[in-house]
Length: 95
Image (cartoon, rainbow, N blue to C red):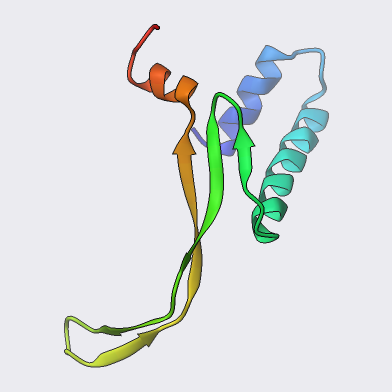
């Protein structure tokens, strides 16, 4: 599902909300998630999952093609962990 499909589904579920307003709501939600992660905060959405930053330290690596040693800078990525409810839904467990 892409962002436009999500927006359309939300508009179908809530027909009393104008599409432009729904688009703005979606933009606010995504921008708040991005800003929280940028500040280094963890995000937890109960029943869905949690997002946290994962830092990869700088290291010395090797180019497999040439064998040359290279330096890889420190970088950050996002780690997502599914919540219990989502895990049960994905695995078709109706407990």
